[in-house]
Length: 215
Image (cartoon, rainbow, N blue to C red; front, side, top):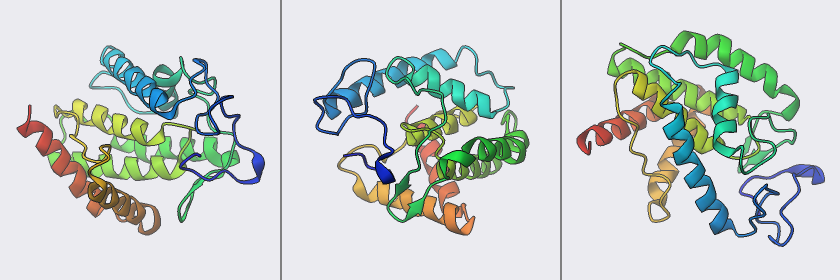
């Protein structure tokens, strides 16, 4: 089953033969492991392609976020780049209701994207603050049906790139590092509920510094 809860039977169709573990997709993939590989490969391709157009002076916008999602998952899902049409929750977090996503993304664009990007020429502490604030707000909106976490981390990497820094070296996607993931989720919850991104800011600072040390 999905790691997210989708009430009322409104969920996207699952791929036939996947035992309700894989969303309906263009590739006919029925295995969660095979889908994970396909999404990772597609993300690497999209990240390489974005280097050609996401320049140091580009400001983030709702449309840029949709374009990134579409370029990543467009060959896998019909809904790539489109805001989700279903309500979703995760654990104790009620994510933005589907009818309000477009409005919330517009507000994100007006109040954070316009203020905090581009990141060229800014100090390191300011960079980490900007990344943390955008990261927390974008994930609370959770605009897409699939791929929000990795998309938000990709965007954080693009912001770091604008400031002349390497992509953060995340420690949350390996199955043997559950404690690191829980630390990240706890920091996100503080950002969601308390509007306090101090812990998330520290995490991004450590991830970027680790990437610099390992460059």
